[in-house]
Amino acid sequence: MEEELKIFMKVWVSAIISISYCYYLSTRIKPGVFRLLFILPVCVQFIFLPMCFSSLHFIGSTAFSLTWLANFKLILFSFDNGPLYPVPPNISQFICFTCFPIKLQQNAKHQIHLPKWVFAIRVAIFSVLLKLYDYKQHMSSNVLLVLYSLHIYLEFEILLTPLKVLLTMALGCDLEPQFNEPYLATSLQDFWGRRWNLMVPAILRQAVYVPVRRITERKMKSEQAKFLGVLATFLVSGVVHELIFFYFTREPPTGEVTLFFILHGVCTAAEVAAKRTSLLNRWNMSMMVSRLLTVGFVVVTGGWLFFPPLLRSGMIERLSNEVFLSIDFIKQNLF
Image (cartoon, rainbow, N blue to C red; front, side):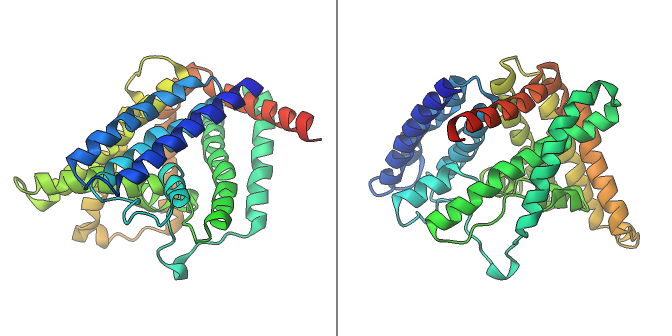
């Protein structure tokens, strides 16, 4: 653990230096392809940095923050677009907004403030969930699937919520939440667009959906262009997930994760198109049924395509083991 922490510090020092270099580029090079050429070496560096670790949590946090978020934001920044434009007023804000899943709160009236006890309940549920892994040999595959899904969601929430609070205090500004109770989603569009990992769809919309739609609208109808835009967005998300899974497993991609996102892209696009028909408008479904169908579809397809590569590599078990090791490490060094 100590060696991994040293590597973690070195990696992030190099990342901060690289992002600082990008910040000063904005004052010297005009937006466009020329600026992109100067930023691309940083993007390549960020692709390889997660390979420095053996810890899954360090791999995941670095891959998510640098390989995914920072790279997409910096590419958009090359053209004066995305979350980094207008350029933040100081370098510390630029660094934070580049590599963390944060975004300025656009509408204070709609700001989501969950009570502190909600976070405490999530931590308690996650603690119980980790203990349940000791009895997984007695659980059915369906129960384990729900368990794995809860693990991924709760660990994301527990790690990102304190980060959001610390950055809000440090930057002195309101930040949007990263999740918006995804278990309450009433449709796939609602789940992926407004509730799950909100920073990612916001970036992919600007980096993939809008350009693809604009290009395809020149040669086809608007509805067809929208469908291709949605499909391209989910395809890119699938490819990036394949890369992140490679960091975790160090095994060649199987294509299952990409297929998972393509399936959800097709279903989301079909769902959006169906909502515009008069037939579906007349069919009123209760919120409870919509939520069960939506979350059920995500969990079932996840069990079919998303989780198998992780389970074959033993990653889920390694994740829980690392949590216990981290707790022991903190106890030994702080108490």
